[in-house]
Length: 100
View (cartoon, helix red, strand yellow):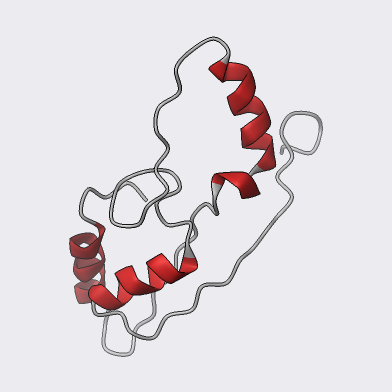
C-alpha cells in the first residue's frame, strides 16, 4: 500500500516467486468500508489536519489498493496476470474484552 512505485514493487515480488508460485496480500478496502475509521477520523479532524490517506492505485497510501479493478490493472502491469480480488469484511473489535 505504501510503495512509491507499486508496479516496480510488484515486479520485484513477482521475480521472487518460484515457477508456479502464488502470492497473496491483504489491504484495506475504501475508507467508506471502514466505518469505525470514519467515526474516529471525524472526531480527530476537529482538532488537527488529517493527512491524505491515498485512494488511487499507483501511489502510496493506506487505501491505494482499495479498488479491485485498479489492483488487477496494477498486477497485470507487473506481469502477474492470474489475479483474483476477493472482499473480506471481518469484525474488528476496538477496545473492550474482544481485542485480544
